[in-house]
Image (cartoon, rainbow, N blue to C red; front, top):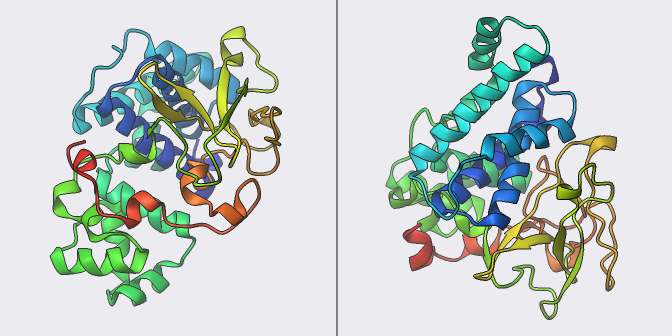
Amino acid sequence: MLELWNRGRELRALRALDAATALLTEGVGEAGMAVLQRLLATVFECGTGGASAAVELARAGDALIGLPLDTGQTEVAARAWLAEAHRQRTLERAQETSTDPVQAEEELLKHPAWALHQLDPLARRIRLVHASTGRAATEVSRAAGLEGHLLARWSRGATRPDAKQRRALARALGLAPGWLGVQRDTIPDIVLYQADGGCPCGVGVARFAASALDERPLKAAWGRLGLYCTGCGQPYLVEPDGRFHPVPAIGTGRFVHQFGALAEGVKPDGVLGLELSQPWPLAHWYSPAGLNRRGTLRVPEAYRSPPSAAAEAD
């Protein structure tokens, strides 16, 4: 497993765990469960060493059987559930490859992917915002007036910043200070992974086109229709109550499951089908000038404004 680990896999696993934790704490319906399946498949693929994203998608579906819909968990319970699902998949993989299960579990506990399960929302938030902006740690630390080693320690969850350091880091990253406030240290950011009735891209009038989520679905169940924002191309699955769940692509390179958004002017290109090694969800991170192509990243509007009362209560 270790020989496959790199920065891209780390970010994919971290974003998948962050989004999955947020959804599990909120409680999800059928649409959210399908998104959870993709997120869990990414964790399995990155941290178990499976040879195929398609196989891991099927295994993730098995792991979700029996998980109650619309029943939110605590953040700690959500992380524990994801870690146990990951451990069980590792043992299954050991059986598939005739590997000693004790040895496989020992290797997992030493794997960098396992450490990601231990990160609380504050550490994940700092790491993901920092990684998505593409700025060097030295640059961020200098802008915040901080000693260089502190950012790394906070990103690992080894220590937490004090009130003054939180304000300085928020300013350096372009966040409203409330997002790094102590009251949000254990609250996942569901606001990035669930929209209410529309797309946050801000491009034109919110219109949507329906198209298959995967160009080449290997099973009928994978060929479900998503709603694509005709402004930015972000695909969503939608709950009956109007909650919009952004859908990630899974896999990398030639094996990635690309989204086939071909209707009403939505044209797939290098960004559509964006998988989790890149900033995601697309609509939050890309400026209007850069949508549907490699463009300018922006700190999401949700992070640039103080957390709403709903976000504080997540």
